[in-house]
Length: 220
Ligand SMILES: O=C(O)CCC(=O)C(=O)O
Image (tube, rainbow, N blue to C red; front, side, top):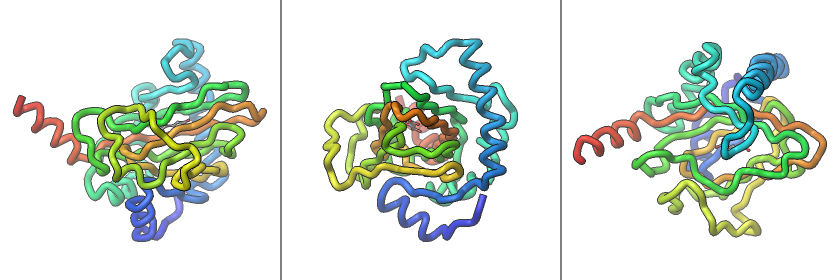
């Protein structure tokens, strides 16, 4: 992973609720990630089916592959996530996100916060593109600045103006990554392009969010 200007990266993340890291992985790292993730995903879908609410998604890969556990807890991106969240972090899930060709269903607009602590520093995801992701094959979309403006009482968000100037389509090349706050509204589309759109992501809680959840529970 290359070194980014951390101040500039943090400013974009704080302002927009997401930040793109171009060429985060070189082509050999992308190939290694594909070689690790694709057979694992195939194996898990064969063993358990593809029946979750969200098709083509596998969470908690760290529980079945120590390599993903190592990446989640100590991957080269972890110091940057800590810097963006101003805190220590707890790795919650390494995940596989696929929008295979012909999959019409995307992810509806949502935020990632789970639990009672619903502040912009609750957590963050880093999402690594294994293929070119664009508007034809279901790239991620973000509502710029939405981490600061609410949408905090549920996971799904129903009142998005898709024509808003704040809607941003995160068109990425293989090896690019994007980091988003757990409070930033985001969604993705289906894929009828004939091109794959596979990704691996790592989701983190800030230590602060965990401390607040725990102290909140103690007060109940
Ligand atoms: O990859 C996708 O299509 C959705 C990803 C997502 O919602 C997330 O990483 O939180």
